[in-house]
Length: 295
Length: 323
View 1 (cartoon, chains in turn orange, brown):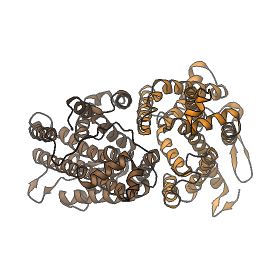
View 2 (tube, rainbow over the protein chains, first blue to last red):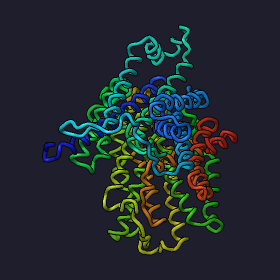
View 3 (cartoon, helix red, strand yellow):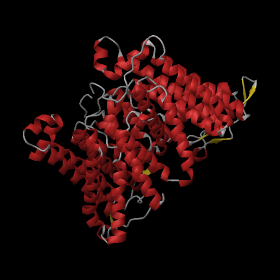
View 4 (cartoon, helix red, strand yellow):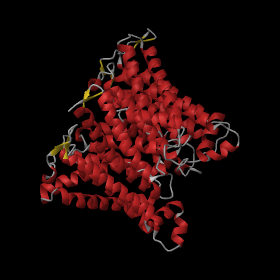
């Protein structure tokens, strides 16, 4: 161990690591928001609640079904994504011709309902979730101690983000999706079932949020309000990055996580607010966002 | 966003105030003057403060088409500053309220200046994010008292003459402030300035092409709305003799959206009715604790899906008069 800027390297890199972890959640969530916004033209306010549902599904699967972390990593996003599909079919599809404002209000209402139901059932204190046995412990890198689970979260989120980027920007299905974002009527005329694509896109975005929730469960406790504060920060991330670019959302997410981690080391009082301050500066300097097309 | 598809009733405005509005206003005044003899005054004062808050919010969402999701910022911070001014600086109530309201105006100018740089859905996210930032400041700042808030704020003597610690005097004061704010907003909406705001709501590009600097109009409307929200927050601090984190939290921003939505976006009396409806609901449901959150959510969903005009919007549509 040595010192950097008068700080023990352990403290500095530990916070940077935590920053990267937060960053991977920002990236996964803002990615989901961007994908949903592209197709449905609404901001999914219940994204935070759906992230929380992912964590809770993992917790419940362990408690009542005996499914561990690895199974949850697959099952939870599918289950929560399915609820997303139901939400889209039951509510959101009726709002397509209305002002996007109504989508925001509706998903805000849904977020309140979901959070309220979980709070009534499980209280507001956090429930613990164990790190899976295979990822317990960690290794000493010389300048810091790296817990295996945290390394896994960063690597896996990065893989998921890049896979999503690849699927949307480089595959045939992705090209349909991008085309439908630009001109749904024309794409429909080519015989592609656009409404079904919209539904599946919403389910996919929600599934991404749930996946982030499962990954967050062993790091933070599982609690009903874990999503609502996070989602506001993710909104700021989305404003900074702009929702026009998938890669933009990923890069901005990780970068802002790092910045937040650094702030925690050098100026801890501002760590809660630094992302909002950056948002204000970006609005002054580049109103369209770092990667945004003018909106 | 090109043309707005908000379900707001388009009113035919002549030079004179429509009779329906005059009748409704007279009825409101009579009811509110008689109410404290029947209903618990503190409940009424709470509802009135929220009514003014919702009217101020409606000025933006209903008449300019701007969705601010962070109005708790102006309401809550005004309430902190008013409470601080009355308790620590020992200012009389009128000056404490002015302090709070001025704070909200300044905050509104800064936040509004940033937020109007982006449109539509981004605008909502920016206002929400800025409000959350100021929530964290309120949480960490010394003078706000953190989790405890500022307690035991003295109501004092209004203009050195009226003793506001008497419940009925306080009620009359709150009533006058609310009605004054209400009439002020009505005046704004029906001024040439208000017509331009409505034009921006309908088609901003067209207004720009007619040579108006829409950004300036939007900013002024934003500051006016923030200021009036601050007035409501300052008065509320005196009514409850308390300023707390609840008032700056995002859930408060959501609540004012709900009140306006339930009453009717873009209607004159909607926010007033909506505020009374929601405050009454919360009052009766208080024993059920967390269910309030779920019920609020359900109301949101129902309103958006089947009841977009709101209570007053539906009545106005039924009677075919502006309300």
